[in-house]
Length: 399
Image 1: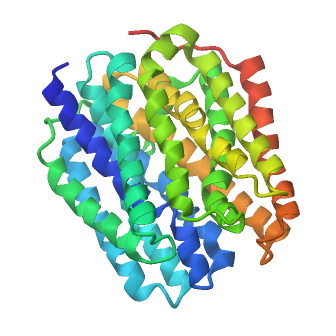
Image 2: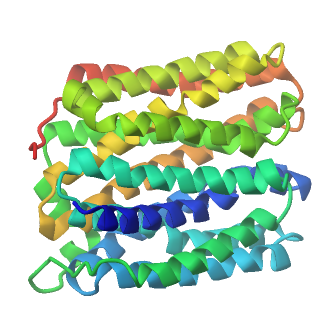
Image 3: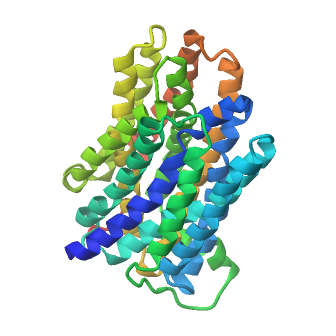
């Protein structure tokens, strides 16, 4: 694989995840500043709803009708518009605020599967090359977080949304310069194809079903982390929460460098179990940190993100690509987005909102209640450990 091609794909990932990283971590504190605390969990639900609705359909389009880079350009352009509108029309009405975020994510979330499928289409060695490309997505998220929180200290303002809109426009233009990625699927259009049933039937196996069930559960615990860790940090008197959380993405960059070696050494099952162990340690640290706002424990939980994310999500993308044929590659990645970033995060975001409003409510400064709060996602992760340890077996093809 040439360095030039790797650089082009890496910049694609950088821009795409910078759009998301610009506003996703800070939006909770922005809504709290607007008096919308009880509706925060809805801001973290709209994306997953889009993850359920859109990826299959758009993956089908990219697989059969239009080049992936053109679909990506259109989605980024259309997704930028609602981000610019939120500060102008949504600040006085939480329903309109959430509605505009939903419109953005309907265009944005399919890009996660499309960029992954586009990268897999062009890399030569998926285990060796894909993590090196994907790491630039994390760097894009980190840079966005550093700019909006560390440099601008804009966590509770509309600026992150506006920056996200600008980056989306740049990503739209850049997408048109990407290597041509023509549709690979053949055959007539059917309802089964649009819904992704053909892809699901090809991928279906007992280990795959077990993996997807665990993916839903882990994503639920992940939703709790991203929706309320910024609120937890602010309540713990930690300044610039989004900037502090960006250190988790920096650890993700470091860990991702070693993913090719680790994947070949441990295999998918051991990687998943190690990743789950990191999630367990993260929530234990958050529980222990609560009474005294212990900063090193809070940062320790954040810095575990590299193992938490890569060993679960990146290894999952490689596993799914191994099982998919070229003709259903985008549909297969769309399926994973739907399950993890769709169904799992919808369930998790709603659960997180119920848990927060029931346990924490308006008294975010009560650290004893935060201890109770973090026990629930910890229990979910422990259940997934048992599921994967007992029932999962890697049935994907190597190469």
